[in-house]
Length: 276
Image (cartoon, rainbow, N blue to C red; front, top):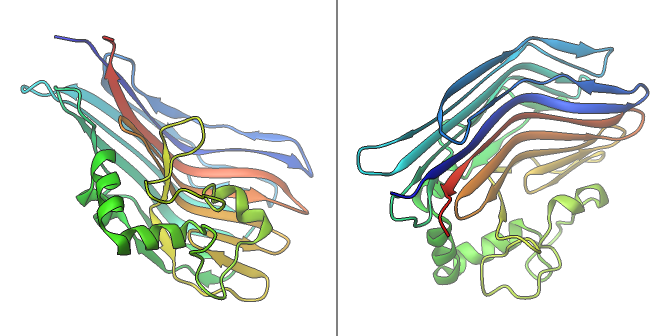
């Protein structure tokens, strides 16, 4: 029986500030060893000046082998009471990923159900999210998602529209300059197959779509919001591979007058065999 190597971790709050002070946000993570098992961690509340604060976080990761030879991983990360410059506020956010790696070595099946925000507000607005969690659970392998993309024209066009690919962008919509790096397929030319980032076999997919409208000083694009004099917030970025998925529930890139980044509820679930 080939050896299986687990690869899974979960992080609560992480980041760094480089303006007006230099500060690394202390973080704790739950990470599986190659042999699997169970690990958990508790991150104590933290804060820095009026830049950020949180009420603590919990993380956990498990990995085990089933009787049929499949290998299963589960990772969760929950952050409580996050406040970034009184612009981004939430009661809690949870990232959850489970994966089943078939004994035959075929593509792993992933599920992000249980990933959610409680009372997310940005720049004084309650954020309305359209979830893609259930839809992606129905196409839980990379191969299934690729097949849906190739065979369902409506799904393909929606994917390309939400990825802000040239020629598919909804009329009247545009990316803020600070959002462009979070939409890597905007200059895509070959749209016949599900896009993958250069040099990798990973596809970037939003787990949520923000339903709020753009307003002056508040620019909404897909799963990103840019707020003037604050920065850009990306909600639910899911990176999909054949044997691994990475989910960041919230990432804030801070601009003037505060510079830095803060990320919350980040999980990675995967693994694979060691034999050639």
